[in-house]
Length: 96
Image 1 (tube, rainbow, N blue to C red):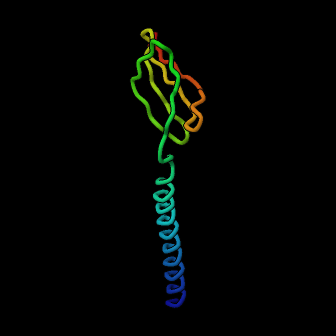
Image 2: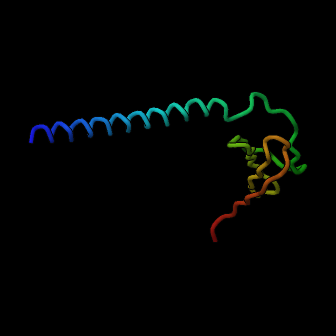
Image 3: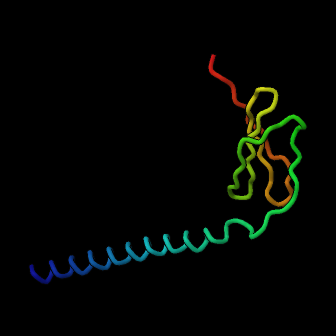
């Protein structure tokens, strides 16, 4: 009986050790890959409408999101980070 209990305890301990190893491996991977997620320098010009006022801009996984206000309406435009080509637009409106 005691021998069987030791076997279960050893198996449980090994399983927990593998779990911690996987957890720390995943955390380490995210830390290391996070350092390489954005290019060192970003240069270029993004074309916006003439009367647009930039409210904010952010980078995320190969995309630049620029929130602008023009003619009283707010919209967010998305551009590719490498060649600055437009990827889409989201407009915002008040609920009726």
